[in-house]
Length: 201
Image 1 (cartoon, rainbow, N blue to C red):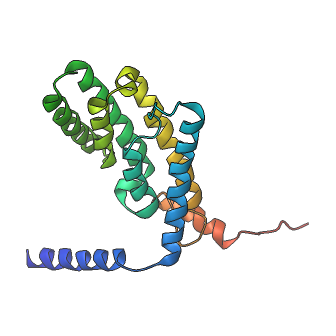
Image 2 (cartoon, one colour):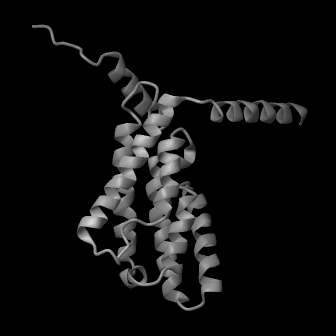
Image 3 (cartoon, one colour):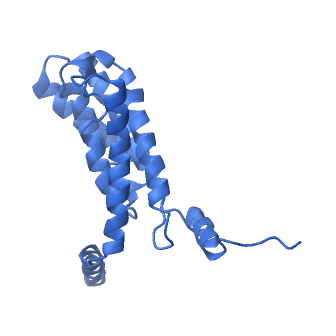
């Protein structure tokens, strides 16, 4: 028991130490990733939807950006969690809204609670997913009218955009690798090690 407590304490100290380090290069790439990820979604919305239809850029994408651009090694920030967490939570939110559409004190907690359990069960836990489920049951205007289309757009389409930007900006330098998968890390390491390998003639 004592060994477990000591080990947990050491791990906690290391995590706190790593998270409080000031790495300006890391912050720079996190900034660029978040800027272009959210910026791309906002750009598409501003050129395809009217000013009153704020349905493509949902709030939970901001929370996802913190994870996939600012905490890229976190298990909660991996592609499986990003897409699976949002999509499953959106499905739960829309389903709950269809069953209890006018009882917000019941639909809101049901949507969030069920989405958490489903993400845990499928190993796709992604905290912003809870917000995606909540948006489905608490929003007014266009989003409730979308029904299950809400799952495809804005949720899935937005996640794909965020993921593509993350794969680009989180792998530009050798110090960053995303997703946090051993096989993917090996391929990236090999690529950075021999970037200009020439063929023998």
